Amino acid sequence: MPSTSNVLDEALNLVKKRLAELDEERQRLERALAELGGTVTRRPGRPPGSGKRGPGRPRKNAPSAASASASPSTSTATPRRRRRRRGGTRADQAVALVEQNPGISASEIAKQMKIKPNYLYRVLGEMEKEGRVTKKGREYHPA
Picture 1 (cartoon, rainbow, N blue to C red):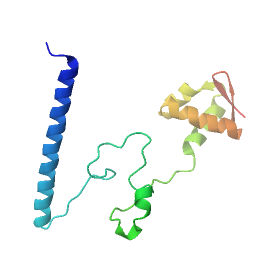
Picture 2 (cartoon, rainbow, N blue to C red; picture 1 turned 90 degrees about the vertical axis):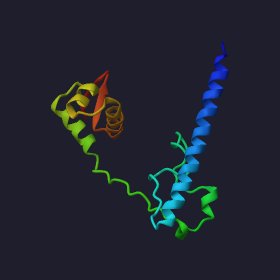
Picture 3 (cartoon, helix red, strand yellow; picture 1 turned 180 degrees about the horizontal axis):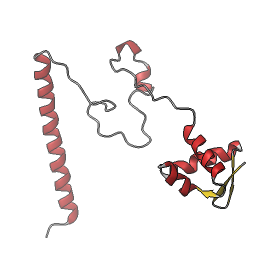
């Protein structure tokens, strides 16, 4: 019976080999498309040849030592637009619910607002620091 490490090594090698084959095919297809006058498009946010960006790794368009020397005019990618914040509406909704229901818990507020409690804990913590609500145990009260 083969050892599990041998089986895993074989599977790893097969996957690497298949990825190399697919990459070669992608390059051939991109060349054919370019010769036909088409443009090669990539999915946004993914540098060529890389997989999914891992946690803690800088974004593609973040300044780095390698890209600092490149001039901005050579870049063809357009910067992403961030969605504008709406002025703390979630925080205002949470404070309004606390004022309407003194002693309400964060999970009850989250259920009424139809959002996840883990996000609400962060919002309520900020509201507590700003002095808009006070916390006693698990209950929130208007300040």
